[in-house]
Image (cartoon, rainbow, N blue to C red; front, side):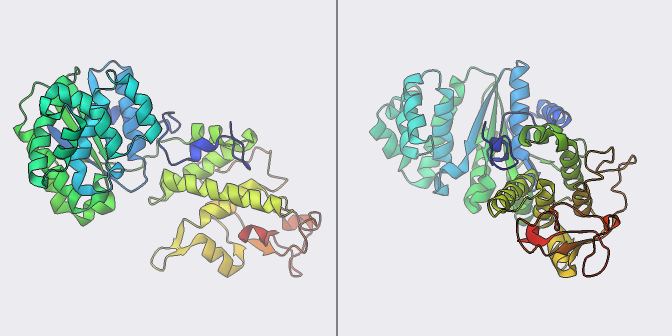
Length: 415
């Protein structure tokens, strides 16, 4: 377990898709699974949603749930980013499929693949040649496979599709589900790849049920909507739902479990109320808040991590969308955390007469409740914590700011 700042498990803030169901997305998983069951064979489904919203996370959970339920399925993950030369996407698909289909037969070479990082064409050629040779003797030798891969594009696509048919027939499961990640980020080459994949499926004669799920960023889909509609048989739109819970996620990352409900309510409120906020941004917010907390401690201050989280989050939420002014920019220009918003409310939770009380982030009706402006104060030295507390100081305590009794908090959090 890695500890850094106020983060307990740093791995959960990584960009990699985790297997753990920390978002409690059971209803979304079940709904998508039902959708898969209703699709006819040889279908390409576009899975459209904002970049970073969690499409890949959901698909990972759907796969896990269906396999645990005993479905007779083979899931193939094809990540286009592993093939920088995007004209070779078909090559990459067939080689990656051969690798994943032949894993049981190629245990000896699995170590070799892991040692090379698993992403290079050379490594895939070396491993896939064993599987391909069982399909067509032409590809029994690695050198022959290399010549095949280096053929002209049109001939290569045609021939590799013939090999692809043979590989599909080697799969024991009756349903094969392909997830083609990042194809939409390959531009015209990616769209052409989906077009040829659709054409391939339309002429494929097999008793198997082949489903292709292609996650597509909403921005890419809108920009090339006509082209995508030629490639996709169906489109499923994915948006955030209020039923998604961040409770388990927060429990796994916070060292101080006493504050997990406050942080959960804050992040949950952000996630639901701001359509542009994705889990990817929430992870970034927490990473940067943690770094700020760590840096301030190293500078001799005694920061409160709730304030660090609030300040970090305010940089990614727009106060004025037309002028693209963030809440953070608005706070700085006004010289205070203005009242009646979620960022101000989280800072209020640091006050000594609120923290540890029964007062929650949201009131009994699920609303933020009214707050007051919180002004910035200039601390003269990091160690002068008595005169300039690191948490919210209420005007009712008798403190004055510029000769006026106001609620205030040190400005070092703005650095």
